[in-house]
Length: 343
Image (cartoon, rainbow, N blue to C red; front, side, top):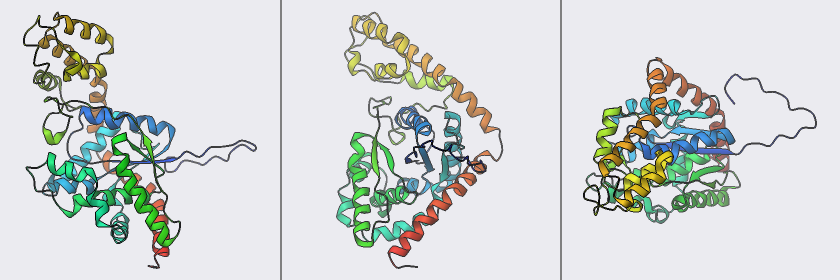
């Protein structure tokens, strides 16, 4: 419910079902790409229609891998907020705030860290995956190891009940649930134990066929102009057995066809059949895909351009979000301090 709106009394005899609270965050580490769009943003748009949503800009989480790039943080934060607004995230419907504007997150992370066994953090698969995927950078730090603990605080400090996750992320949320259960056993039933909200997390391939990721430099950014999109799509790997037009292809292993499934429903069957027969060459197949990606994001880019020219918009949105989240955070922290006899 937006700030300043009147709260209407329910009609006598009517029943109102409380919407469950959803919490999810987004790290400001650079431009939004197609993998983000289908993996996160579309889901966020749907959830804002169905639940009470708290969406936050995870700028402290950004430091776990980009601690040496803090000069980029203000710009990345601004760009991310504008991207989300252009995509359709409505700050009147959701609470959209910046993590570092909620200083109590740092305090609660310290307190929960006192009861979290080191072994629980070391067993999280994401830690080793990040070390492997970003081996060229020195990120074996306390912040990255403690990422799941900070994530737990993000959820519990706003009383998050549902957390959107893919099936592969359920074990990560289970760690948060274990920490909450341990706190409640020690100090009483204070924290809400979050539940997973299973969502589709499609594998969106990058130019090299691996999962699209900024750290792998294989992305299509949703803000890219038409020439950039076309150039990027031209660099995609394809079926290695399809060397020239006329060679039969295997669309089931081709990253370009995987993207066609998302962007080209109107020509999907024809594309698959023509690839298999050899009638469709890879150059034309990529051209068709680029046409549809450009068209798909045209409205987004136009809205984004309009928002870019509204001075003070991002600051206004984040200030309003901080004001909306503050009463919830203060209530949680009072309960935590009281339970731990720290008042």
